[in-house]
Image (cartoon, rainbow, N blue to C red; front, side, top):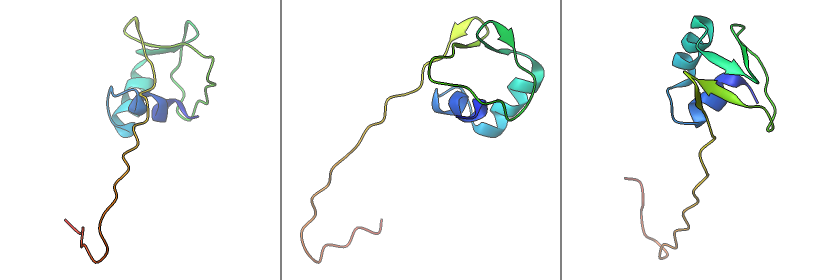
Length: 74
């Protein structure tokens, strides 16, 4: 997974803002500061933002059962 996507999924900022954080040098992966865009990380890597360890958000699935001929455009 790309580092900027991981940061965005952690709820810190958007992916474009994550690129700015990476180039500013405030993101570290496994104790090393990363400034290169497009860096790939694994699931076992430790990502820190200002000494705060980031965790990916859990996915939430919602199941909706709608009646037949019911319009849900809004």
